[in-house]
Length: 307
Image (tube, rainbow, N blue to C red; front, side, top):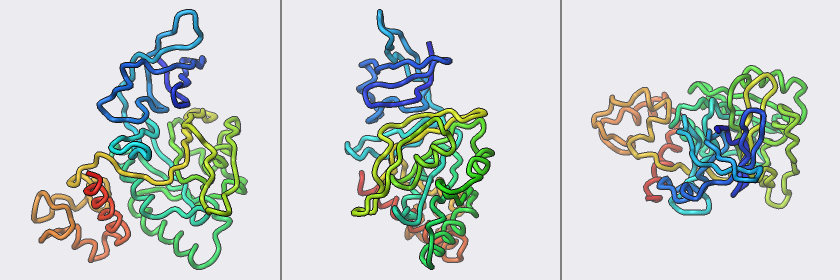
């Protein structure tokens, strides 16, 4: 029988088969994967199950090919990767200006991962009711000026206080499988509880000592959306390391650079200091935002040092 993984709890998975939910474990042969994954199975995967004899549990005997996935470097094992979720229609990155602050570099790393599989991404600016002062205004202005011209939807919300929150999100969620990601403490669980009340995810206050989020989601889990579609909630991400992106391919995942590829003097141009680089010319002319170009260089340097 076949089903979709809707929850990961480490060594066990919850698989939905029709209207039935089955606890399943991974068959040993998949544990030694050439992909070097910390999680050979991810929420969103379609799998084949075999019921265990005289048990209510099952064994996962096959993992179906993934249409796409969002992946990052493992924080625990060097040269290993971790699949956040698979078979997605879109991804929502929840960001905040403070408590915690989401850096532009973090946003860009996430977008590179979604762009690499052509997964549409939405930036959800949460806690706008707490944004005060010139610094907050400048940060929010940067978010709109940098990302909206690139085709990314930017939504401003207050997960706690918006009365029409469900109506704001309904057009984006219906009939789609959507990943919710972001730092711990940005309000992902609060947002999920508003959009899917049955989820009943726990929420916690930000630690006053560290000004960083307290993890409330331990494992990834999929929740059905009323009217069709689903939301995949994930543990908070402190850092987002890019994995397996070739130096010469990285610029393909920056939409503003992609349009100029092939126009540089050299076919193998990395857009760093090569003569006749059109991308760098466009940065100087203001067609490519300097923040984004700096993010590109930072990721490029990280990939070099990682290898």
